Image (cartoon, rainbow, N blue to C red):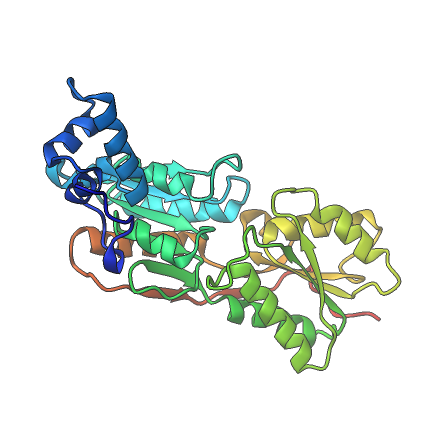
Length: 346
């Protein structure tokens, strides 16, 4: 039997029968290869493994229906250095404490292929996955969701196959910008991160905030000033902000893409000998350090714990079979006005 072309119509999830057909062997032969059973010839093993690879078949996940649930929920986060992600994990854990499910956390390694952490969760036979701002195309996420229920956090692309929980990033940006405008600032810079991947068909939080910032500036006949930082270099923000503050046209205010960036911006402001009266600052996320009495940083609260709880709710609906249509929940952010965003003095 000649192998057919790789790929299945309508994005259907490959089965063990598809692997057998492509490899030109029986279903039981495929099962033997998967189980590592005795008596499999090298040629048969090579055929089956090649078919599995070409079809993207994941045998351990496919066996889930035979063994029942794993009682495991996986969460993939971009990295461990941002407290906002910790807030999300806290909300997930809080909600899962009411259920028999346990949480598996998978922070990706930058040395791994994009999406490797999500596939690792599938191979650990989790019953569902939460992924925070994943750097995969919508069709790649849809493929994963066919193997296990998937909820993304932060991705605004509307899918018919996986669920999502988002903050209204455009509205949150408008809150920050309107506040700075209302207290007299007109020269407002935006310090943000460069997206890890160019995904024009995926609506990620930081590009949405940047677009909303630029729109606000243009709508008010102001010139946008965007500073892009490397998200993989935590100290990259500091020298770029120093350069911005010591240039010929120092802005009177800065809107930071998220609070980790904002903390580095604040450090640069202080090291340049400026105060919040010289350069106002508004961040995004509202991490706990922002409200520390020695900092008092104005920021947009994103309600990370709530987003985590709601993501679990969506996932459990899928796992329990209560819903088979995609759903997107939008959380409304709130401006937390503190002392780093004082009125303009120049």
